[in-house]
Image (cartoon, rainbow, N blue to C red):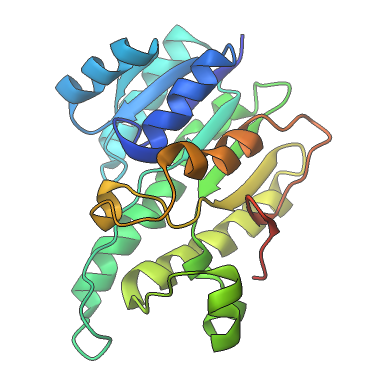
Length: 235
């Protein structure tokens, strides 16, 4: 049985990914900061609820200990939890605004990955999927013509975009450090979720496709990549 953890999985892309991976036969730990909500939706999809606030070191360590005791290993980690943060202009953004977003989107993914590394290393085919965004591409950000082709809706969000660019670098360096693992960053695309007040053009089913696909890669699958449903993205 494949054991999987998905952070931020009580709604949106995380919940849809949990539903799909449960259907694929995984034992899914549905990570949520709200214990009641996590337990409720976990029952709905046949997953196990896991209390985890990725901005809290002690909470993350406690979650890792629980999975260690119950499962003994982790085969798939999906770092899905993320926030948008302030959408004010770049002139108005402060270091405090940046820190709030990086604490979840970057440092949170690192906290979770670091805490669960010993369990991932016990897996025969460990996989890590970091949910990024096309807005984190430096190549696209520096080429306005690429916006329309690769990112249909371009938003110049200093905290969010830069945090996803940082997550992409984290992904590449983890992939180099752990060549036996399949570690990739994915762009779900502009998906209708709470993150954007449900303004996205895609459904959560469409957005989750690339997350699920990369969660299911085998030992010979790609690693160190940055991909969308349409294929590789420029860094």
